Length: 188
Image (cartoon, rainbow, N blue to C red; front, side, top):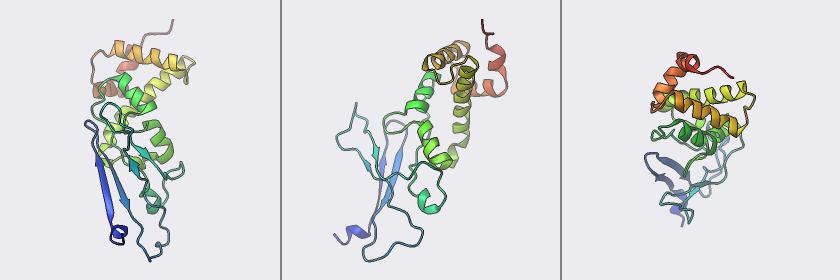
Protein backbone atom coordinates (compact mmCIF):
# COMPACT_ATOMS: atom_id res chain seq x y z
CA UNK A 1 0.00 0.00 0.00
CA UNK A 2 2.90 2.32 0.77
CA UNK A 3 4.17 1.92 -2.82
CA UNK A 4 0.75 2.85 -4.24
CA UNK A 5 0.71 6.07 -2.22
CA UNK A 6 3.89 7.23 -3.99
CA UNK A 7 2.60 6.63 -7.50
CA UNK A 8 0.82 8.82 -9.99
CA UNK A 9 -1.63 7.54 -12.56
CA UNK A 10 -2.87 8.77 -15.93
CA UNK A 11 -6.26 7.65 -17.21
CA UNK A 12 -7.02 8.05 -20.92
CA UNK A 13 -10.50 7.45 -22.31
CA UNK A 14 -11.24 7.80 -26.00
CA UNK A 15 -14.98 7.98 -26.82
CA UNK A 16 -15.20 8.31 -30.61
CA UNK A 17 -12.58 10.65 -32.03
CA UNK A 18 -12.17 12.80 -28.93
CA UNK A 19 -9.85 11.90 -26.08
CA UNK A 20 -10.16 12.71 -22.38
CA UNK A 21 -7.00 12.50 -20.29
CA UNK A 22 -7.00 12.92 -16.52
CA UNK A 23 -3.91 12.73 -14.31
CA UNK A 24 -4.19 11.74 -10.67
CA UNK A 25 -1.27 12.11 -8.30
CA UNK A 26 -1.52 10.42 -4.92
CA UNK A 27 -0.30 12.48 -1.94
CA UNK A 28 3.09 11.43 -0.61
CA UNK A 29 2.84 9.89 2.86
CA UNK A 30 4.83 11.52 5.62
CA UNK A 31 5.55 14.60 3.52
CA UNK A 32 3.66 17.83 4.00
CA UNK A 33 2.28 19.47 0.87
CA UNK A 34 4.47 22.13 -0.66
CA UNK A 35 3.22 25.68 0.05
CA UNK A 36 0.63 26.75 -2.50
CA UNK A 37 -0.22 23.19 -3.53
CA UNK A 38 -3.94 22.61 -3.99
CA UNK A 39 -6.11 19.58 -3.57
CA UNK A 40 -5.51 16.46 -5.67
CA UNK A 41 -6.68 16.48 -9.28
CA UNK A 42 -10.28 15.56 -10.04
CA UNK A 43 -10.95 11.85 -10.25
CA UNK A 44 -12.82 10.37 -13.18
CA UNK A 45 -15.02 7.32 -12.89
CA UNK A 46 -16.60 5.26 -15.60
CA UNK A 47 -18.37 2.83 -13.23
CA UNK A 48 -21.76 1.66 -14.46
CA UNK A 49 -22.65 4.92 -16.18
CA UNK A 50 -22.11 3.57 -19.70
CA UNK A 51 -24.75 4.41 -22.27
CA UNK A 52 -24.54 3.09 -25.78
CA UNK A 53 -21.01 1.80 -25.27
CA UNK A 54 -19.64 5.29 -24.51
CA UNK A 55 -18.43 5.84 -20.95
CA UNK A 56 -20.09 8.67 -19.04
CA UNK A 57 -17.41 10.51 -17.09
CA UNK A 58 -18.03 12.15 -13.76
CA UNK A 59 -15.62 14.51 -12.07
CA UNK A 60 -15.20 15.08 -8.36
CA UNK A 61 -13.38 17.77 -6.39
CA UNK A 62 -13.57 20.41 -9.11
CA UNK A 63 -12.22 23.84 -8.18
CA UNK A 64 -14.62 26.74 -7.67
CA UNK A 65 -15.99 28.37 -10.84
CA UNK A 66 -13.31 30.92 -11.61
CA UNK A 67 -10.32 31.02 -13.93
CA UNK A 68 -7.26 29.43 -12.33
CA UNK A 69 -4.91 31.94 -10.71
CA UNK A 70 -2.04 29.63 -9.75
CA UNK A 71 -0.32 26.59 -11.15
CA UNK A 72 -1.72 24.51 -8.28
CA UNK A 73 -5.30 25.39 -9.22
CA UNK A 74 -4.49 24.93 -12.92
CA UNK A 75 -3.60 21.30 -12.24
CA UNK A 76 -7.25 20.76 -11.17
CA UNK A 77 -8.63 22.00 -14.47
CA UNK A 78 -10.05 19.25 -16.68
CA UNK A 79 -8.63 19.10 -20.20
CA UNK A 80 -10.91 18.61 -23.18
CA UNK A 81 -10.54 19.13 -26.91
CA UNK A 82 -13.27 20.53 -29.10
CA UNK A 83 -14.42 17.39 -30.95
CA UNK A 84 -13.61 17.54 -34.65
CA UNK A 85 -16.42 15.14 -35.56
CA UNK A 86 -19.04 17.88 -35.00
CA UNK A 87 -19.96 18.85 -38.55
CA UNK A 88 -23.33 20.62 -38.41
CA UNK A 89 -24.57 23.81 -36.79
CA UNK A 90 -27.24 22.00 -34.72
CA UNK A 91 -24.66 19.48 -33.44
CA UNK A 92 -22.28 22.32 -32.55
CA UNK A 93 -25.07 24.12 -30.68
CA UNK A 94 -25.94 20.98 -28.69
CA UNK A 95 -22.29 20.42 -27.77
CA UNK A 96 -21.86 24.07 -26.79
CA UNK A 97 -25.00 24.24 -24.65
CA UNK A 98 -25.43 20.69 -23.33
CA UNK A 99 -22.20 18.75 -23.89
CA UNK A 100 -22.01 15.13 -24.95
CA UNK A 101 -21.05 11.76 -23.53
CA UNK A 102 -17.76 12.21 -21.74
CA UNK A 103 -17.66 16.00 -22.09
CA UNK A 104 -19.55 18.75 -20.26
CA UNK A 105 -20.92 21.67 -22.26
CA UNK A 106 -18.37 24.09 -23.65
CA UNK A 107 -20.47 26.86 -22.12
CA UNK A 108 -19.98 25.39 -18.62
CA UNK A 109 -16.26 24.77 -19.17
CA UNK A 110 -15.81 28.39 -20.26
CA UNK A 111 -17.83 29.68 -17.29
CA UNK A 112 -15.90 27.58 -14.77
CA UNK A 113 -12.35 27.59 -16.14
CA UNK A 114 -12.03 30.25 -18.83
CA UNK A 115 -9.51 29.23 -21.48
CA UNK A 116 -7.57 26.91 -19.12
CA UNK A 117 -9.52 23.77 -20.17
CA UNK A 118 -8.64 24.18 -23.88
CA UNK A 119 -5.40 22.96 -25.46
CA UNK A 120 -3.43 25.76 -27.10
CA UNK A 121 -3.23 23.68 -30.28
CA UNK A 122 -6.99 24.11 -30.79
CA UNK A 123 -7.18 27.90 -30.53
CA UNK A 124 -8.34 28.42 -34.13
CA UNK A 125 -10.87 25.55 -33.93
CA UNK A 126 -12.36 26.96 -30.74
CA UNK A 127 -12.46 30.54 -32.05
CA UNK A 128 -14.16 29.45 -35.27
CA UNK A 129 -16.82 27.46 -33.43
CA UNK A 130 -17.34 30.32 -30.98
CA UNK A 131 -17.95 32.72 -33.89
CA UNK A 132 -20.86 30.51 -34.99
CA UNK A 133 -22.32 30.35 -31.47
CA UNK A 134 -21.93 34.11 -31.06
CA UNK A 135 -23.71 34.65 -34.39
CA UNK A 136 -26.63 32.48 -33.22
CA UNK A 137 -26.87 34.38 -29.93
CA UNK A 138 -26.58 37.75 -31.70
CA UNK A 139 -29.36 36.97 -34.19
CA UNK A 140 -31.52 35.63 -31.35
CA UNK A 141 -30.98 38.88 -29.42
CA UNK A 142 -31.89 40.95 -32.50
CA UNK A 143 -35.18 39.08 -32.65
CA UNK A 144 -35.79 39.70 -28.94
CA UNK A 145 -35.21 36.17 -27.72
CA UNK A 146 -31.56 35.80 -26.75
CA UNK A 147 -32.36 33.12 -24.16
CA UNK A 148 -35.34 31.65 -25.99
CA UNK A 149 -34.65 28.10 -27.16
CA UNK A 150 -37.37 28.49 -29.81
CA UNK A 151 -35.74 31.63 -31.21
CA UNK A 152 -32.30 30.02 -31.18
CA UNK A 153 -33.75 27.03 -33.06
CA UNK A 154 -35.23 29.38 -35.68
CA UNK A 155 -31.85 31.10 -36.15
CA UNK A 156 -30.10 27.72 -36.47
CA UNK A 157 -32.71 26.56 -39.03
CA UNK A 158 -32.23 29.78 -41.03
CA UNK A 159 -28.44 29.29 -40.97
CA UNK A 160 -28.84 25.70 -42.17
CA UNK A 161 -31.03 26.97 -45.02
CA UNK A 162 -28.54 29.68 -46.04
CA UNK A 163 -25.51 27.39 -45.67
CA UNK A 164 -26.70 23.96 -46.83
CA UNK A 165 -24.08 21.26 -46.30
CA UNK A 166 -21.36 23.83 -45.61
CA UNK A 167 -18.51 22.83 -43.34
CA UNK A 168 -18.31 24.67 -40.02
CA UNK A 169 -15.09 26.28 -41.25
CA UNK A 170 -16.89 27.66 -44.30
CA UNK A 171 -19.72 28.97 -42.09
CA UNK A 172 -17.13 30.63 -39.83
CA UNK A 173 -15.48 32.34 -42.82
CA UNK A 174 -18.88 33.54 -44.08
CA UNK A 175 -19.60 35.03 -40.65
CA UNK A 176 -16.21 36.69 -40.30
CA UNK A 177 -16.21 38.27 -43.76
CA UNK A 178 -19.85 39.39 -43.51
CA UNK A 179 -21.24 37.13 -46.26
CA UNK A 180 -23.73 35.42 -43.96
CA UNK A 181 -24.98 38.76 -42.63
CA UNK A 182 -25.47 40.02 -46.22
CA UNK A 183 -27.37 36.86 -47.14
CA UNK A 184 -29.55 37.04 -44.03
CA UNK A 185 -33.17 37.87 -44.96
CA UNK A 186 -34.67 41.09 -43.56
CA UNK A 187 -37.15 40.56 -40.77
CA UNK A 188 -40.78 40.69 -41.83
